[in-house]
Image (cartoon, rainbow, N blue to C red; front, side, top):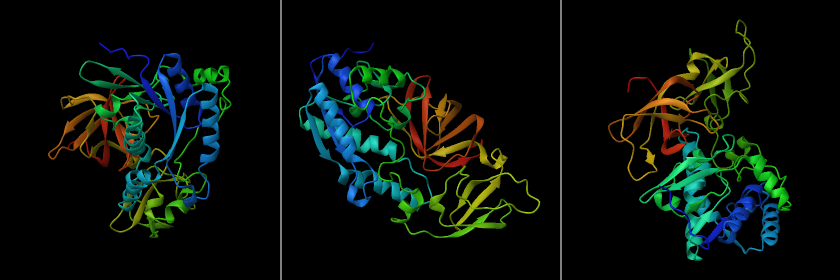
Length: 370
């Protein structure tokens, strides 16, 4: 049975300047919590020439806090972000993988650095405007999908542990985004129609390749087909990911189908990018994958082998699969339907219906038999 929260407890909301966190703060006030807010700066703008509009976001956060009559704290977690998120981001690209910094940001910044700071201020909980739900039983905190399937963010929260979730509130978990905007407009928030932020803050509006090349040396090499025939040149494997179509610069060849080319693999040893022609080429689909050791959210890990659903990318429909443990604690996941563009470094997140069980980092696409 879920436990009811005690009203009057102190909550600090991560107020980003966006409409979601603004409505989260409003809902908590309406539920009787003692609400304060915190604006986090997670990137040094001097390093990226203002592409992440922190000043505009701060002004919007201040306007919302003033309208709600709540205190707004301000703090920079840029050092923590660099050490715990950006360093991981670069390390993954160095070894040819494609990382997901949003997952790491939740684990290390929003629900560690922010949580620790809020607790030092005497808060009982922290809250964010993320679309997810929590259910609290006597001995465990469960994470569930948000009610809005288009906005559900449990995928990005799958690395949180019990101590983090026990102190977390997600006031928008039962709402759909149109309702959130309507509530914001009715409350008179000046940011009620503000566009949702997308992408990674530290990259901002710049081209991804130009940004990454500032930190990692590019190593040009051949683009080859499945037969190993060179058909073009790449400027660095780090600029490409499985399933990618754009930016390959491969023209038509005599006798080919004329269909677009897609990245199917990275040959790290020979610094070659392997491509195939056609969005539905068989080489883009694999029936299984292997992962690093998983993180399970609940105190008791699920019993393996496990039949469940999984996602290998945000917004993907649930995919039915069987999860088995390998020697060394890694996982072998076999899908009922072959998956397109399985990408090492990305997350696979496991579900039983609406219940988020946890997840793991993908090591490689694999054969059906482990």
